[in-house]
Image (tube, rainbow, N blue to C red):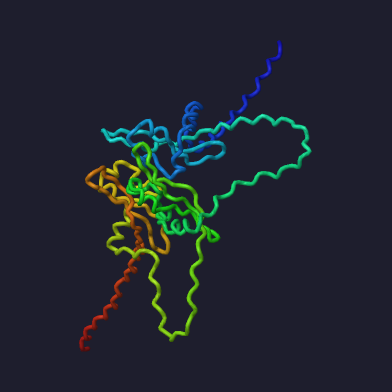
Length: 348
């Protein structure tokens, strides 16, 4: 008889599947190239200090509204921002930011053709062109007026933030945006009144540079009799609000983390209670909160609006309540004294 066939080898053990990869961080999908070509051609208004609803013409005209965008930034060859969209809510129109971010790859410009080879020239080489220079200092007669203008940038505003500046040339051009002061030179932009196609607005103008004149020399000192020290100067900011008013201000909702202003939502422009339940908190320092509350404005002759109050508020943040001291147990009573024993009977 023939020998039995050999047994088959045992099956290999099954390997466990690899663990799933962690999900990538969420980013909005990049629109198609033809959509991005349209988005990249829109006019950016964020660089001018505006939002979609800053101009009345965009709030009433869909084509003008949707021809603009807010460009947040450009990084790694991609532009990020939000487009302006036209909304019609029961007859009330508004130009507002889209809910979704866009990310569009910026097509690099075509490479220039190589320069033609030229025969060597016997003329000496010209020096390289100088870098673009800053505008010259304005004359002192002009700077005396510029330095006296009211700065709105330190108040968290732009030239067109308030409607009265968009309608009044004198009010508009009495303000400026002061960027910085360094080495005795003040730099900023003037507010300029512009009227075009029947619509007026207060816009940022040209960059200015003004030398700040030194303070006048004090008169020669003369010996004066000794006098008691002067009282300390009052604080340079507005007085603190009363505690009763601050208790209402400190519980208002803050719009700064939401990247919104008082008039960013149409519902706040239409409803006083909703409008005045918000604020923009600038800072908290040494236990003092600073900012501006939202106020409801109804002129009676036009649409109502929700805007920032003119005055800053200063509120002292109350310390957290202290915990009550732990209650002590009642003192323990002394043990009862033993009762006297009865007298023993007489012995017989």
